[in-house]
Length: 333
Image 1 (cartoon, rainbow, N blue to C red):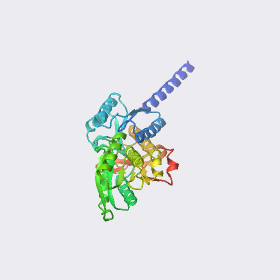
Image 2: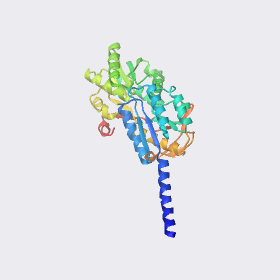
Image 3: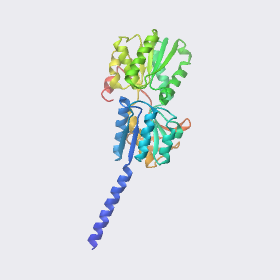
Image 4: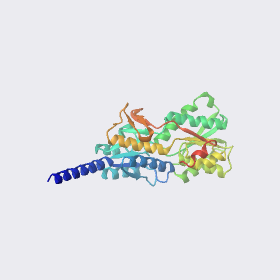
């Protein structure tokens, strides 16, 4: 009888441990702007790495078109699936609020990454780098390329993308400095993070502004599309390109001189940090309040800081890719 009781107790312990592990694993959803976006696919890889480390299940949602309506439908589906956390790169900062607040009211932890939702729609935002620094450095880069003189244009993603719009605001503030008096921002165009539309918008810029000297594309889809157009038209050295791009997609254009250099951060690390943040929220190690800190896996200690009316967690500074280092990175991401 003693052996039977000990055996039963051992089984109970095993079942309780299995149950605890299952309870901790959870479902973690990542909702990105659109399908077929190479940057977001790398974000997904990093997010999956983080969630796999804690034994969780990843649910990846990518709408066919970068619309807020598609993201709202996906959020509603995730609420029905009773996920533990939703991490979203928003197609609109405000329109997602009712759906995301509904998710939080159901106990789902909500965070944004890359492109933020407003503070009422999230618990915390995971930011790739300081928005001011991102905006200013791109103006500084294109200015150096064109000798601080001439017309420039911006090829952005969607007109509602919060990260893009914030960077562009900082670009405009940087342009107010006297050293840019001989430069003119003639147009902000939107390629909607779609390759074909970004190609068309680039061609339209060249046609509408025959004296255009530089293009800034703060979007991986846009900068790759613009690089192809300028290469096909043999405009290296005549119209310069910079912005935010994936090394794997931009190596050709950096080497042929169309884009002397560009910037980005590691999207795999961005996704990984978002996954680690989601886990910290689910475990209630953090709530998203200023001053909280947690260990984000391989990225080490991270702190929640103030960001406007909300809070955020910062990945790091933008990195410059040029002809001297592009070969080291083009096979990484």
